[in-house]
Image 1: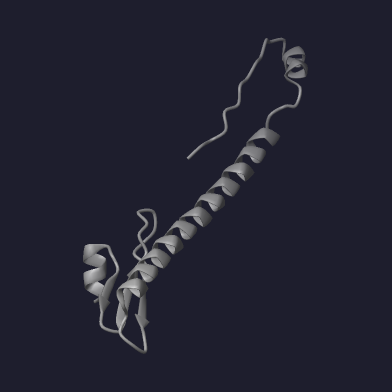
Image 2 (image 1 turned 30 degrees about the vertical axis):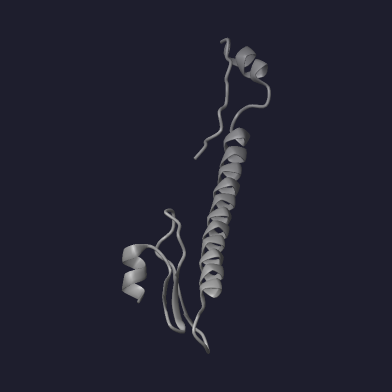
Length: 106
Protein backbone atom coordinates (compact mmCIF):
# COMPACT_ATOMS: atom_id res chain seq x y z
CA UNK A 1 0.00 0.00 0.00
CA UNK A 2 2.84 2.38 0.82
CA UNK A 3 4.51 1.82 -2.53
CA UNK A 4 1.23 2.33 -4.39
CA UNK A 5 0.62 5.63 -2.57
CA UNK A 6 4.10 6.84 -3.57
CA UNK A 7 3.70 5.70 -7.17
CA UNK A 8 0.19 7.10 -7.67
CA UNK A 9 0.83 10.19 -5.49
CA UNK A 10 -2.55 9.81 -3.80
CA UNK A 11 -4.15 8.28 -0.73
CA UNK A 12 -4.72 4.53 -0.87
CA UNK A 13 -7.50 2.66 0.96
CA UNK A 14 -8.15 -1.02 1.61
CA UNK A 15 -10.90 -2.19 4.01
CA UNK A 16 -9.90 -0.75 7.40
CA UNK A 17 -6.45 0.45 6.28
CA UNK A 18 -5.39 3.72 4.72
CA UNK A 19 -2.16 5.28 3.58
CA UNK A 20 -2.53 9.04 3.44
CA UNK A 21 -0.37 10.82 0.88
CA UNK A 22 0.41 14.47 1.63
CA UNK A 23 0.65 16.17 -1.79
CA UNK A 24 3.29 18.89 -1.95
CA UNK A 25 5.88 19.29 -4.69
CA UNK A 26 8.19 21.24 -2.36
CA UNK A 27 8.57 18.58 0.32
CA UNK A 28 9.72 14.99 0.28
CA UNK A 29 7.15 12.21 0.20
CA UNK A 30 5.20 12.17 3.44
CA UNK A 31 2.79 9.38 4.25
CA UNK A 32 0.63 8.40 7.21
CA UNK A 33 -0.51 4.84 7.86
CA UNK A 34 -3.97 4.57 9.41
CA UNK A 35 -5.63 1.43 10.76
CA UNK A 36 -9.28 1.81 11.71
CA UNK A 37 -11.34 -0.48 13.93
CA UNK A 38 -13.91 -0.89 11.18
CA UNK A 39 -13.95 -0.59 7.40
CA UNK A 40 -13.32 2.92 6.13
CA UNK A 41 -16.39 4.17 4.26
CA UNK A 42 -16.59 6.61 1.38
CA UNK A 43 -17.26 9.63 3.60
CA UNK A 44 -14.32 8.76 5.86
CA UNK A 45 -12.12 8.32 2.78
CA UNK A 46 -13.11 11.74 1.50
CA UNK A 47 -12.47 13.28 4.93
CA UNK A 48 -9.08 11.57 5.27
CA UNK A 49 -8.06 12.72 1.78
CA UNK A 50 -9.15 16.26 2.60
CA UNK A 51 -7.22 16.08 5.88
CA UNK A 52 -4.06 14.98 4.03
CA UNK A 53 -4.41 17.83 1.52
CA UNK A 54 -4.91 20.38 4.33
CA UNK A 55 -1.87 19.09 6.20
CA UNK A 56 0.23 19.45 3.04
CA UNK A 57 -0.96 23.04 2.55
CA UNK A 58 -0.22 23.86 6.19
CA UNK A 59 3.29 22.42 6.00
CA UNK A 60 3.87 24.39 2.80
CA UNK A 61 2.71 27.58 4.50
CA UNK A 62 5.03 26.97 7.45
CA UNK A 63 7.94 26.60 5.02
CA UNK A 64 6.98 29.83 3.25
CA UNK A 65 6.89 31.71 6.58
CA UNK A 66 10.31 30.29 7.47
CA UNK A 67 11.73 31.48 4.14
CA UNK A 68 10.15 34.93 4.57
CA UNK A 69 11.71 35.22 8.04
CA UNK A 70 15.13 34.26 6.65
CA UNK A 71 14.78 36.80 3.81
CA UNK A 72 13.73 39.49 6.28
CA UNK A 73 16.78 38.80 8.44
CA UNK A 74 19.03 38.87 5.35
CA UNK A 75 17.51 42.19 4.27
CA UNK A 76 18.14 43.72 7.70
CA UNK A 77 21.77 42.55 7.64
CA UNK A 78 22.27 43.95 4.14
CA UNK A 79 20.70 47.28 5.09
CA UNK A 80 22.85 47.54 8.21
CA UNK A 81 25.97 47.37 6.02
CA UNK A 82 24.93 50.43 4.01
CA UNK A 83 25.60 53.97 5.21
CA UNK A 84 22.52 55.68 6.60
CA UNK A 85 23.23 58.99 4.89
CA UNK A 86 24.68 58.70 1.39
CA UNK A 87 25.49 62.43 1.14
CA UNK A 88 28.09 62.10 3.95
CA UNK A 89 29.88 59.35 2.02
CA UNK A 90 29.75 61.47 -1.12
CA UNK A 91 31.25 64.45 0.69
CA UNK A 92 33.98 62.39 2.40
CA UNK A 93 35.20 60.81 -0.84
CA UNK A 94 34.39 63.57 -3.33
CA UNK A 95 32.12 61.45 -5.48
CA UNK A 96 28.47 61.57 -6.33
CA UNK A 97 26.88 58.39 -5.04
CA UNK A 98 23.37 57.05 -5.17
CA UNK A 99 21.98 53.59 -4.56
CA UNK A 100 18.79 51.63 -4.84
CA UNK A 101 18.43 48.50 -2.70
CA UNK A 102 16.18 45.76 -3.98
CA UNK A 103 15.59 43.03 -1.38
CA UNK A 104 16.08 39.41 -2.37
CA UNK A 105 12.95 37.48 -3.25
CA UNK A 106 12.31 33.80 -3.73
